[in-house]
Length: 68
Image (cartoon, rainbow, N blue to C red; front, top):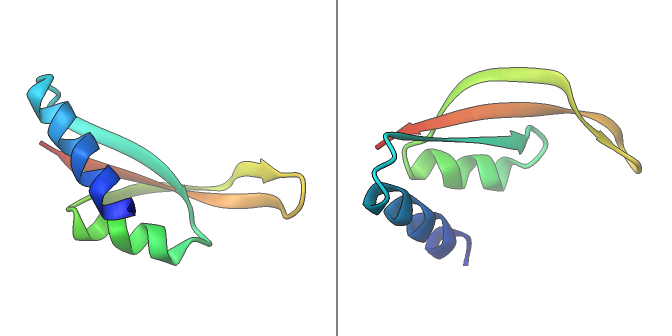
């Protein structure tokens, strides 16, 4: 499901004329990071305290970009 949704989002962005997509992903989610990398997203930064979870506290965010 994740691959199909990601592919559909990328295609919609291309059709709409976008030049790039950016996303944020929690660093502790290696499956999601791997999925985004397979689609060509590249990391361009991190924020060690980018997301505050009530359960886990602060978590690192990975910023990723895909040039279309």
